[in-house]
Length: 448
Ligand SMILES: [Zn+2]
Image 1 (cartoon, rainbow, N blue to C red):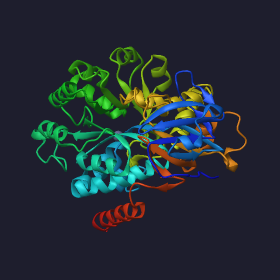
Image 2: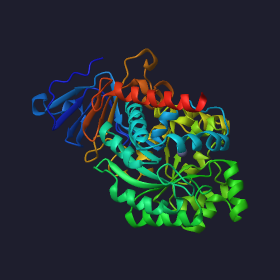
Image 3: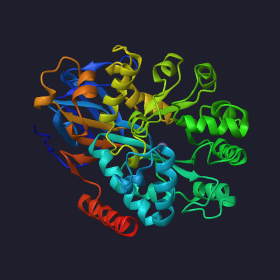
Image 4: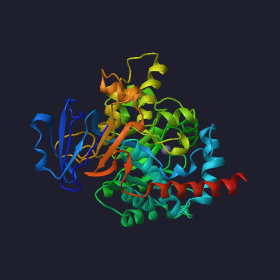
């Protein structure tokens, strides 16, 4: 397949020839369509016959035999943890966190680690079709810099926890450091800063309330892991006498600015509360499976009108950042659990990974579908391959047949960041080597 570039000029870009999955409210599919981009935005979407003449644009991307769709939105990850990929597998969340992740984080995580890890994760995401991520970690100003360099769009959430962390050795300063981060975070139009309170079991009531207040007054997202394991439910009930959802509600931190990851153990009698508070949920089925946390009641959330997006979680609990693989898992796990093959159909899952995710991260007016006026965050997948042939249903192909490797070209904010599998923003080889070296150091100093 050829993605011929006839001119390198920026400005007006015409993508033509492929099938366009718009993911607009009518779920329109244009069998042979075109997209006209002006700078960072989509100007027109239509059938090929209405496309402007080639000479009227600065650049043409020929997407024949390809599927053109909105970039995927990864609603929950810890990008820099790519450096810990495969470090500690096959463990419970508690053992994994307490005996492996927290100790190595305290020894090795610094701004350089976060920059290099986030850059590598960004490359993996772009290669597999993710154009926006919602990240939570330490030294997030370094993560923001990596996001800017690699060309992604991101919500970057500074980690807040009530014990010493690599970027806040004195937890009494965690809110002050959060505020400082918001003032100093490198920014451009692709970056939204946020605060990320790790969880209700690692952040006390005062920290949660103060962090939420900062987010509210700055109109930025508040990120948290919520109801991930049964242990969490038990621990919060022992400490505060209520479930973790009711605990957070009592503290006043549940509202539409809250992005809650996991929500595996939200009880049926709490669905209406979560819906009423307009909490947004990041569903991470592969991480939940790997850590044996459980299966979130996603079909119930959707039925209650709760916005749900998909997330990979950090690379250390997955162990990849491929949203197409996450989509496949999300579609299948609920069928198995409910013994019902009709739940979480392919179209629902594709929506969840695109415009659903955009709603979860608060960017639904800008991204998540291919419509005039929206940002040009676009991915192109190669359909002319054995495992993609024949084609009866594009949504089914995306969820059950495709993988991240099928993504050939990616545009973010109107800029081509990957052209026919070639990364154009940073030196990929150097980025891979840098994290390989970090891995060698960690291995030498921890595993002997
Ligand atoms: Zn997480």
